Length: 95
Image 1: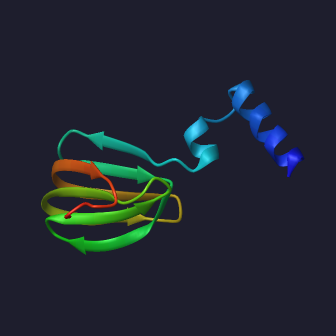
Image 2: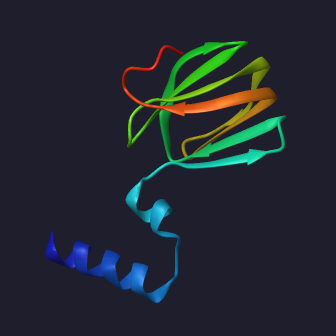
Image 3: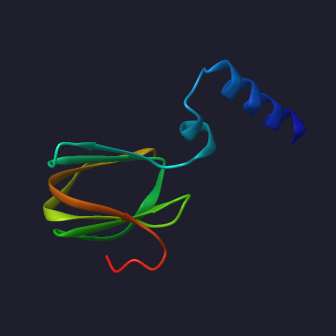
């Protein structure tokens, strides 16, 4: 365990990788109002055309909008397309 922690600290200190990628913290990229990418997700909790709820290491992420479509998805990232109106965080969200 100490070796893996030490290696993680070395990588973070050396600037080899962004800290978010190594620690599992979600990264959210919003491109205009038509595309949103969530990196480091833990799956989709619910999906509707006007709201997508995504699990993350920091709790649920709710993306609200119109005509939302899951364009691409793999283990690391989810790419949504459609008109994005809001991105919300928190356990008690009404998404």
